[in-house]
Length: 308
Image 1 (cartoon, rainbow, N blue to C red):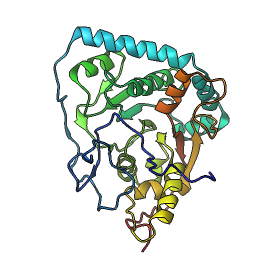
Image 2 (tube, one colour):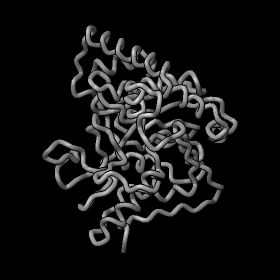
Image 3 (spheres, rainbow, N blue to C red):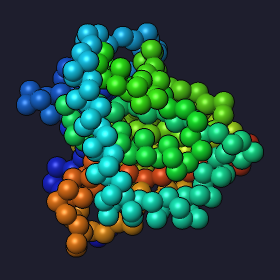
């Protein structure tokens, strides 16, 4: 990338998510008075990972409505068809079937034949088109990879949304894991536009070569995180922004990252419809991440400011 980023860049564009894994001094959920989510990767204030361990969870709104469930299910099915017939998805499939991705999946599988999928941070599928596009993408992947089970969690899910997800064959977690799932077998994690600290929770819980090598991570581009970090370092030389996701940055040297599709500089590609642009936006800056660490690799992480 040669051009400077947007004056107010955010590597985690997730307008529907209230799930913040970092603890902000401003208020409990990391939102300022305007209601916008604070940048989850850097801040001029002290940030810490949420120390609260995983806890039992039930929907804040446990009520269900068959009418609402039928409406949401219909919207999801429509979104799946819309995505599956788009130029964008055709490009995604080309990349999925490429040796770059297939070899990465095979490496993670090793001798295994099953790849369970865990989805964190999907948002409100009843009210958010972005959430439905991301969910539709995950459902379509189920037919393209050896995915044998799908688990999903977001604390904003309602009782009706949980019922719809179960009808689609997904298991809604009864515990808020805060991303700290320790893997014992190859696992695909899908974290669509989640906060950087959620990625860090997942990585820190599996901070050894054998576990990381079993993970296939589909989510925000670590390379773009690093680019953003270097930009912030240059812009705020004297203010010393904090690194909120040191694990994600420390592990980059052992990650092979493959963009979800062949990228161009502009969001809207020649010949693409406005609908395609909406689909691209819902999965913008998403990459496959494959880990390749040798046994005995010593993993170091630096909990510090960008500049000493």
